[in-house]
Image (spheres, rainbow, N blue to C red):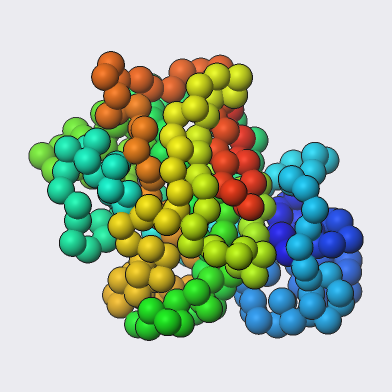
Amino acid sequence: MRLANIDGRLVLRGPGGRVDVAEASGGRFGPDPQDAYRDWDAFTAWARGAGLAGPAEGPAPDGGSYGPPVPRPAQVFAIGLNYREHAAEAGLDEPASATVFTKFPTSVAGHDAPVELPGGKVDWEAELVVVIGRRCHRAAREDAWSYVAGLSVGQDLSERDLQLSGPVPQFSLGKSYPGFAPVGPELVTTDEFADPGDLAISCALEGGEVLQKSRTSCMIFDVPELIVQLSAVCPLLPGDLVFTGTPSGVGMARDPQRFLSPGEVLLTTIEGVGTLRTPLTG
Ligand code: ZN
């Protein structure tokens, strides 16, 4: 099934189309989209029992305004240099452990949310976003997927001047302007995928060129390994987001370099998950 934040309300999309969760559950869950993660097991058991779970047909429908599927994540983890070709294009060695930073939660936005470019050099980074469904601390690899509520599409928008301005790179601040962490349009539960670890991922300009194209199976540290490494230190909480890193093809690594301009629209697509649209303004 697929979850969305439509006009600020939790909406489930299963075999029968869209359902407003607060109305369908008699107020037991929702209407706040964050409420799906309060007790993920109870929520999914209710959806199954009500016959609402199961695959949904077609892309995310029009109608209503999409907010982020998780509006208020407690923690937003992001991973640098997690695809071999991206580490190579950045001129850096393949890391021995995950490079972790945060995108501060005020940067989270939804599908089709306009992002005001702050000046400088704003770059694109298409990323698979993992949404945690159950609390986990010191997870074992074989259990890691069981803590995942679902997958979504994200952009790790990055202002490179600020990111690289200090004596050492500071990833978090230059990647946390308002709207710099768009996620959506929907969260797709992991049971909808034959293999949630091998999905096509791409990024393009609307009406223009393809910027990035890869598969999530090309990650250096796959989703279970990221959950192991992150939860070895931080307990992961329901509704937390993990931006899992970007493939090669970012603007900073091009010759000549190329960055985003007002009026351009980014389309970020992950197979079986959806297409996240991100318009850029001045
Ligand atoms: Zn990134």
